[in-house]
Amino acid sequence: MKLAGLDGCPAGWVAVVTVTGQLVDAKVQMVQDLAAFAVIDMPNGLVDGPDPRDVDLSMRARLKGKASSVFPTSARQALAEIVYFDASVVNAQVLGKKLPKQTFMLFPKLREVDRVVRAVGQDRLREGHPEVSFAEMAGDPVLSRKRQPDGQAERAALLERAGDPAGDLLAAPRPYGVAADDVLDAAAMLWTAWRFRRGAHVAYPPVPSRDGTGLEMSVIA
Image (cartoon, rainbow, N blue to C red):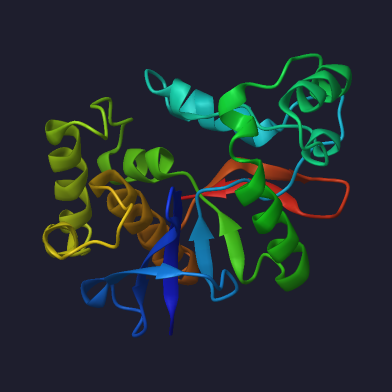
């Protein structure tokens, strides 16, 4: 059973993949095909207004002290714009808030994920968030910074305790443009995919809503 956890990085999509379904066999690779069953750190489902996604609010409530790791998600109407100023204006019209540049920079990957998930369905591609997954592993939000050595060590230890060979993944040569925190985030998404396939996952919010295209808006962990 092939499972993958995906995270976006400057080089594209980095995946931690197991073809056996066992976490201990996980390997790091770059991927182009998002359609194998995977959990991805990218929104599935976008609102048409006037309220923001309830999944984002639910994640922030779970990540007390770490809520800033949840980026505001754009309105679907803004995703069609290719100029930041225009996208921000549209987002303000629909959701009442300007669009952060950090969110706009994710638009190419967000468009790709939106296209794929609408084509293959959420039985094949689901939304996750690494910090939510790490919070589930630890029992509380992990407040250390993921780009600092202590934060990476803490997250690697959580993954190792969960059965993921994080130490080996970090020690192995990485593709160009892939940082250690990218690998850890993808590994957390693989852990979530593994949990989902066993029916052991949790969802935020527990009772999800759907967007105008029918996509369930929830993060699993």
